[in-house]
Amino acid sequence: MEVEGMEDKGPSFQSELPDCQATQQQQLLPPPLDLQSSTPVENVYVDQKAVDKLAEGFLSHYLPDLQNSKRALQELTQNQLILLDTLDQEVTKFRECNALLDLNSLFTEAKVYQNKLVNIRKEMILLHEKTTKLKKRALKLQQQKQKELLEKEQQREKELERERQLIAKPAKRT
Picture 1 (cartoon, one colour):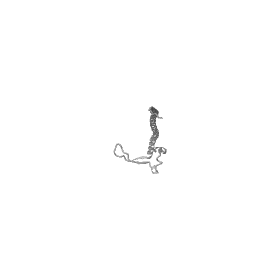
Picture 2 (cartoon, rainbow, N blue to C red):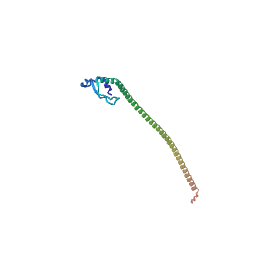
Picture 3 (cartoon, rainbow, N blue to C red):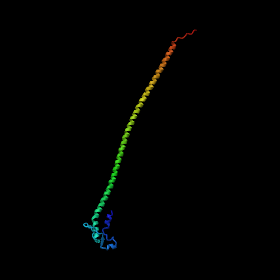
Picture 4 (tube, rainbow, N blue to C red):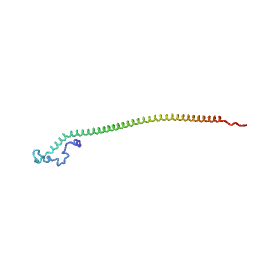
């Protein structure tokens, strides 16, 4: 991620090196291995200007690709964050839909229970009407029975009175 900083500074390495090293024209490098033989090659002296030029060429060759890759990664990261936010919103929508389905089922259940209550109320009204009719009929029957009992009592009293009148009375002697 420090690649942008390298671009801003530029490839001049000689100004950053200490004075004693900047004056040296050659630098001692570790011995490279010869690929064809197993014996190390003797010490090789390399010109500092050549190293600087090679480093500058290396950076100028790979730095734009690295910067493009960095930009692409940043863009991918930003797109990934946007996708995560969008996914979170979709999950929230699904949860709300599930909540609505639960709410709809509750409303449906409430409607079923309301219908049951209406039916119970109708039955109670019907039972109330029947009991009222039965009470009226019972009252009428009771009144009729009392009337019949009263009529029987009056009939019996009339019969008793009639029997008393029919019973011979001794005549008074005067």
